[in-house]
Image (cartoon, rainbow, N blue to C red; front, side, top):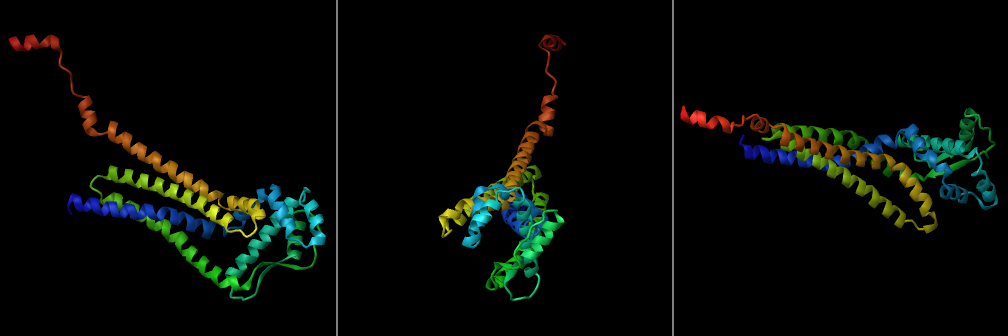
Length: 275
C-alpha cells in the first residue's frame, strides 16, 4: 500500500470517527444518563430551589389548592417531596418503556407518600393518580429508546475503533493523531452548539412564554452532563494536539541530532591548516 493510499484511508477513517463523536455522546447521554434514576434525581434536585420551577409546579394544581401549594413549595419539606416525586415519575416512565401496556403512564401519590415516609418526611397526600404520559406517546417513546440504547453503545465504540484504525494505517502516525485530536475537539464544540441550539428551539416552541424560565431551568439541569462532556472533548482534543505539535518540534530525532553537532573552534583552524 502506497503512502498516498494510506494517507487517504487514514483521513477517511479519522473523519468518520470524529463525526461520530458528538452523536455518540448524545446517544449515550440519552440512553444511559437519563435512564439512571439516581443521576436523574440528582440532576433535578437543585430545581427545587428555583422560583420559576416552583411556580410552574404550583400552577399545574387545581385553582382551590394552588395557594396552598405555592406556600408549601417554599417550606423546607419541599425538596424531599420534589425528589420523591421525580423518582416516582422516572420509575413509572421506565416501567412503561419495558412493558407492552397501552395504558396511560401515571404516578400514584400513595407511592410518593411512602417514599417520603422512608425519608422521615411525613406528609398526607390525596389518594389519587397523577397523569405523566398519554398512552398515544408510548409506542414512539419505546421505539426511540430502543434506537438510543443501541446507538449509545455502538456509536462511541465504532468511533474509537475507526480512530485507532485511522492512526494505525497512517504513513505519519503523529500527524494522524494530531488530526484525530483536533477532530475530537471540533466534535465537542459541535456537541455544545447542538445543546445551545436545542435549548433555543425548545423555548421558542413553547405555546406559553410564561413557562420559559422554568422549562429553561429544567433543560439546563438535564443537559449539564452534555455541556461538561463537550468542554471535556474540546480540552482533551486541544491538549493532545498541542502535545503532538510540541513533541514533533522539539523531540524529533532530526532536532536532537542537529543540537548535538559540535561547533568548530576558530582558534584551532590555523593549526589544522598548517598541518
